[in-house]
Length: 555
Image (tube, rainbow, N blue to C red; front, side, top):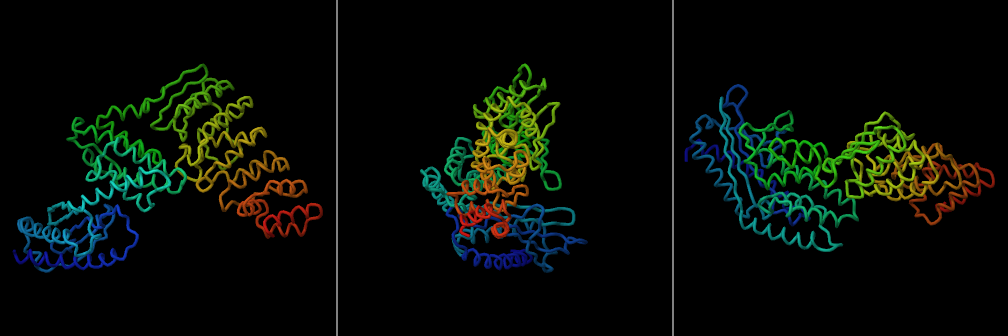
C-alpha cells in the first residue's frame, strides 16, 4: 500500500475507532430498546473538504450518522503532509477499497456489541480537489442479521398487530414498525400488504387516542420519508432553499415509472393528506407530471365513490373525497337553498364522505356566529348563514348528529387552536339561538376532545350573553364548563348571586367526581378560596347555598 494512502487511512481509522468506542459505551447502557431495532449505526462518511484558499489547506470530516443537508456536525481532523501525495488513482484503487474492507470486517464482527450496527451499512467517501470532486459509495448487508429481523417483524405482526385486543405494541415500537412498512428489504411496498396492517393497528388503538395520534404521526412521517428519499428522487430534482421543491428530470419518461410504485405513492399521498393536506396536494400534482391518470382524477373528481357534481334548483355543488372538499354555490339566497345544501352534505356523510371536510362557498351572505373564538372560515360562514332561518334548525341538528365524531376535526383551517370537531358550527350556533337544542349541546360537550380542542373554553361566556344565567339552564352550563380545558379560565359573566342559582348548581354537581367539582367551581368563582370569601360575605339564604357548594367539594 502506498505510504500516503496508509497514513491517510490510519488517521481516519484512529478517529473512527475513538468515536465508535464512545458510541459503543453509550449504546450498551441503553435500556428498553425495541426488538424491532436490529442495531443503531448504518452510515459512515469520510470526506476531505478543501481549504478556503488552496485545496490542500483543508480538513478531514467524519460523519457517523447521515447528516441533514442543512447542517454540518462532522468530526474534523487535521491531515499531515501526506495529503499532497494523494491522487485520484490512489484514492480509487487503494484508499477506498481498504476503508471498505476495514469497515466490513468490523461491521460483521460483534466487537462493538450486537446492537451497535444495523443489518445494513453505507460507506461514503468524498474528496475535494481544487476544481473537481471524487465520490464513492458502498453498501454492505449482514444477511443473517437481516433474516433475524424479518423473523422478528413477522412475529411482531402476528402477536402485536393482528392479535385481538387488548394486546397492543408498545409506543416505542411505532417508529420502527412504521419505517419497516416502507423498507423494501423487509416488506413489499404494495397497498394490499401495508394498508391492512395500518388499519388493523389504528382500529386497535381507537380507545386510546393519545397512542393512536402517536401511531398516525409515525406512519405519516415514514410515508413522507419513503416518498422523499426513495420515490421522488428517481424522477425529480430537488430545488429550493430547503430542497422542498421538486422539478421533473429532463430525461424522465412517463412509461418508466413502475405502476406498482406509483400506486403506492398515491396511497401514501392520500394517507399523508389526513394530517397534511398541502403535502397531499403537492404529491398528487407531481404524480400528474409523471403521467398518472389516477392522480389527475383524484385532483379533479376524487376517488369516484361519490357523484362529483350536483345541480339543484337553488344550489350547485361539487365534492372531492380525496381532497376532502365540498364546494357549494348558493344560486338563490333563501331558506330553501340552504336546506337543499344541508341535505346534500348529510347525504354525502351518510355515504361515508370524510366528516373532516373543508368547504368552499359562493354566497352573497357573510354571517358569522356571535362567538369570537371560532375561525372565520367558509364552513363557519355557511352554517351561520343557514342559522338565520329558524325553520332550518331541525335540519341543522340532523346534520350535527350525523357529523359529530370524537377525535376528528374539520380541515377548514390549518391544525391549530382554531381546529374544531365536525358539527361544531352547527351545534354551537343552535345552542346560542334556541333552548330546544340544549340536549344537543350537552351531547357535543360530552363528546368533544377537551385535550386537543380549545374553542369550547369560551363558549360559556357566549352562551350566557345569549341566554343569561337561569336555574333551569344550569345542567347545560355545567356541561359546557366541564368541556373546557384543564386550565379553563373563570367565566366573567357567570355569577351565582341568587339562592335558586346556588341550589340549581348544587343539584347539577351532585354525583360529580372531585376533579369535576373543582373544575366547575374554579370556572364559576375563580378558585375555591374565592368561593369561601363569597360565602362569608353573602347573606342568607344565598350564604347557605354557597356553603353547601363548599361542602360538596370537601370544604
